[in-house]
Amino acid sequence: MAELVIRKMELDDIEQVMIVEKASFATPWNAAIFNQEITDNRHAHYFIIEVDKSIVGYAGIWIVMDDAQITNIAVLPSYRGMKLGEKLFQYTLQFAVKMGVTRLSLEVRESNVVAKKMYSKFGLVPGGIRKNYYTDNQEDALVMWVNL
Image (cartoon, rainbow, N blue to C red; front, side, top):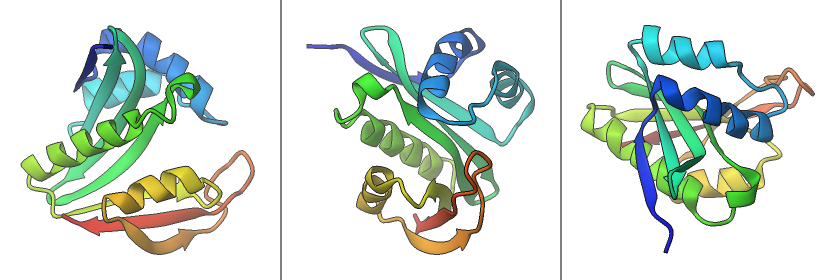
């Protein structure tokens, strides 16, 4: 049985996180953004999920007062379909609740049926559209919300 660990992201994790990032997004963040998020953004909290000590996914959340915004969540393509994204999202939600968050939101590509289905499992509902949100192809983003 594989050893599964979810923990806070550290600076030493960024190199492996970049592999996940580049495999997951058409316009990936660079390592400097993750470095800044971890070291300089007091509202940012990032978590990684490891399988047998290898980082296979990560999630980020900004918490301001009692509101939270998921910045990103990704799992390596070869590890998708194993419910790791759900475990990571649930962990992040539980962290938000412990921090006093009462409302959480995120943006998701309208075409990302798998992600929208997962978020719905956690009670998130559509709240609006951000037109031309994604810079790679001008796809709209669906804004989803949940009161915690």
